[in-house]
Image 1 (cartoon, rainbow, N blue to C red):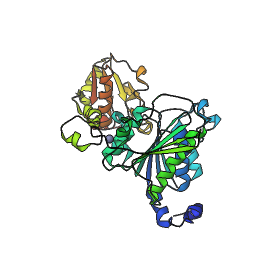
Image 2: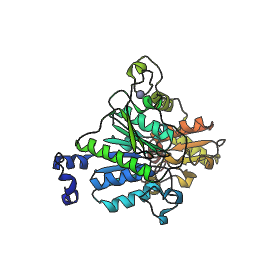
Image 3: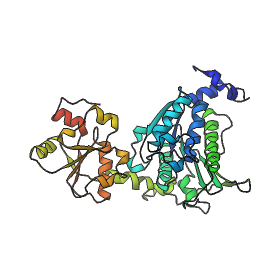
Image 4: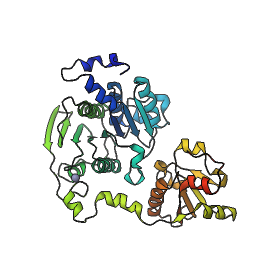
Length: 370
Ligand SMILES: [Zn+2]
């Protein structure tokens, strides 16, 4: 460790030693949502020395966020939250590797390999899709999940260890399920709850007094009282109940992931080249990340760049009636986007088989492969 003096205070704890600190340094936390919960959680994990953080959020900083989202400044209004957060976090602790993913965390649009297998997931999202996807990711990859939510003066937190039942879907379907209704809050409430998520994460990751699993704790900040509940396994849960899954029932995971593998139309690079040469009207969409687009792209044949995570947000920029060809590096990400767009009514849509790599191989070897 290059800078252990930084961590002197936590190393003075009786059961927290250099091994605990080293475990933090080896850990990778995936933080879904960089709002009121995610800002404080990410900050506390960063300054405690968690080695790698991946931040996922599609939004930009807004003025109304500043009353609770403590990583952002007035001069960052309008820029990507994950980019602004990354810059701030790296200044807090340059030893920590921070990755910024400006995209929705929706299972249909997630490439598992893009996120690796994190050591822990913090669900700091404020929308049901991202929370459901965080739970699916936790269950399918056996990664522990710390989820929190805020409703007015009430905060909720739960820790699931990602090893079988129950899961957050069991909780959501029980009579203890949280409300999805939007409501105002004092900025203190999400900051307290995000700090509790960070606390549970640090204790789990370091091995220092790990949190209790499968418990819901509700904090009432108006009365300064807490209530604890044991979360029961839902025997009908289609996310985590292996009996339900083995019975052949369609799991939530299959519903989301299986749809991706439905038959989709493939187009070969030679076919695309022929269509371009024939002057056919085409909508070519490159769904790779910005750095991949910058390295090489098909703009010369009319490609438009919309990163995978932005596709649903920017769907109005695309014409559902146009003959559409979607591509990525090698065809995996774009197949998922084709699926998602088919569901949105794009009928004449194709996946570029083999992606830009096969285009480079078959059509234009002058382009750079990244
Ligand atoms: Zn479950």
